Image (tube, rainbow, N blue to C red):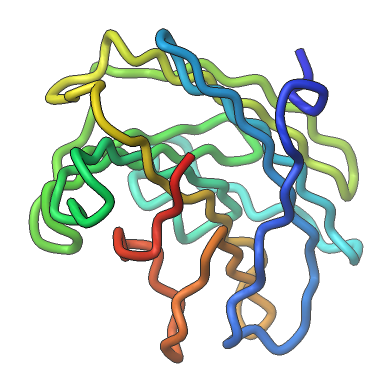
Amino acid sequence: MSLENKGIKRPLLLHSSVKKKNFDVFFTYQLSKQYFALQFDVTKRDDTSWIIPPPKTFDLWNYDVVEIFLQWRQNKDDVQAPYFEFELCPDGQQLGLIIFRPRLSAASLWNYTFTSQIQLENNQWNCQMTIPWPSLPNIAETGILYGGAFSCLGSGHSRNYFSTNPNSQERPDFHRPELFIPL
């Protein structure tokens, strides 16, 4: 199932710290009362291999990964509300977290899995995530949904960081709820 005909395909923006753009990343999403569906389309501009984590790795963000952060707010200024982080790698490894306070308090969603589909060919990685709302803990499915799509790709000095709304500081920082956009 492709979401391209059901939503707006948007490019993710490169963080200003990146010297050379080695990837193109687009995302499309669809929101319903039952689920949030997201599609990422990633294209490499070179012949390097995808950086795949070892099996059962927790820190997926250190490898090639796409991510979505989702936060239900009661109003636009409710940036302190908990939010969810979902990550997916080219080999299908996934991680779900609930973030109570960025870099201070989080919990793994070990018993929660979102569904995903992946197509991986040479320099193209297309993936979809479907996140069902009813099974998420501590969610107040009311209010306004905010979030951000992100991607970390490549390694070393050629690492690329993409975001719906990149932070302006020297280092990329995805855990900035004040930069999440309404979805």
